[in-house]
Each structure stands twice: as C-alpha cells, then as structure tokens.
Length: 290
Image (cartoon, rainbow, N blue to C red; front, side, top):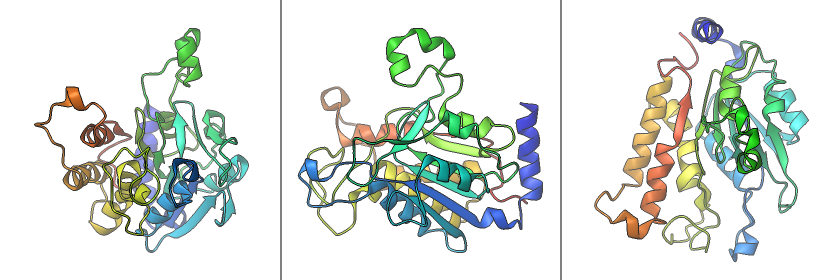
C-alpha cells in the first residue's frame, strides 16, 4: 500500500502540464445484437457510448480503439500498445466479469475480443496513469478470491481471482491506472431507439438518439466526463459523487413503490446502477495534478 500512496503523491505533483495527460483513449465494439431484438437500428453500442464521452472532452487528443472505423483497430495487442503510452483518461465500454473485459466485432456476436487480467499485467505506462472508467458487468466486483477456484460457479463467472479487473488496474505497480470506476455487479444497458423488448427502461419515444447513451450505464459513464470537463469538478471523489447525484436527479427513484411486486422495474435498475458504480482510488485526488 505504501507504493500506491507514493504514486498518488507522485501523480499529483508531476502530472500537471504533461502532454500525455491531455490524451483520452476509448475502447469499444458491438455490445448487443439489435436486429435479433426486432429493432430497426444497428448501433455499435460501445463505439456510440465512447464517442459520446469524447464529445465532452474538448482540448484532449482523442484515440478511438474501435472494432470498426476508429483511429486504431481494436485488438487486444493494439489496446495494450496504446495504453502503455499513457493517457489522462481511458474508457472501456462493453461486457465484463471480475477477471476480464470483452466486446464483439460489428454484428459478430460469436467472437469475443478480450482485455483480461493478463493484459493489465502487461501495462508498463509507468507514472502516466489514467483515470479509468469501465462499462461492463462485474469488472469492479471486489469480493473475489483465488480460493473460489474450488467453486464451479465462481470459476465460470470469473470470481476465482486474487484481484478483480478494476482493482488490478488501480493497484498495478509500474503502470495501470491511478483510479478505476465500474460496476460491482451486473451492469445495465439498452439498445435501439425507442421501444424494444429487452430494454431495462420504460418504452421510450424514438428521437434519433441511441438509447444506449440516454439511459443506464451508457448515460452515467459518459456523464462522468461531462461533470469533469464542463462542471468544474476535478477532485476525483467530487466528480464521481456528482455523477451519481446527477443520475438520481435525471432518473428519480420512486421510494414509495412496492418493490417486492415490481422487482424488475426501471426504478430498481436505476437504484442498482448508482449503488454498484464504485470508485477504486483516492477520492481526494486532484485529477491532472496540482
């Protein structure tokens, strides 16, 4: 832990004015099969969400590591290479478990392109440490243990590991991230534009804007960058906390409802979205240093 404290101090005292900090890398691909859910859209959700996040980050160099049409084609090796160069911010949008993050090529849902614990251990970005946001299920599930290797279900769900994906990034010596923010449990997303069967939201009205950036994980993850860049919140815990507060203001929780009889309601999903979106890192950290 002394090493982690030392690098937080080093980050705050050496990052300001450094060229590497003014870069943001995003990684994404196709998260959901819109067409098979009878939608009229074919969004590449991970790319839509990460592009939305980039739209807030004026003044930063944008590095799109995408499965289609990005600056760099997303492969595990390409992502490792780019992240090892160091950025101020990194945003993954896709699927996950405690041991891995993955996405799909466009419309090829039988193929998974992963960035797992092994890839994190290859990070050699030194003191060029990003604030990292990860969209995916369970990437920050901290109740993991190597002893769970004797549990078949835990093995299958990636829980038999000494560190979860988010904490592996934030605690890695010699590289990784200065902080990680992501889900402890099942992350939620949506597809299409307007009503569609698998949505975790009430039927929305088609408005030409992908639902994946208007609700749930896609909203809260990209909004973090809006709070940082446009609302004067550059202390990490305040940025994280304001993002959560804004989500609850945007999607108010109905505390009076009978939750037992409505256990799949949008209100419960919204409540869980903020409860499980946690920060690994120093909440007093000055993003970008002093």
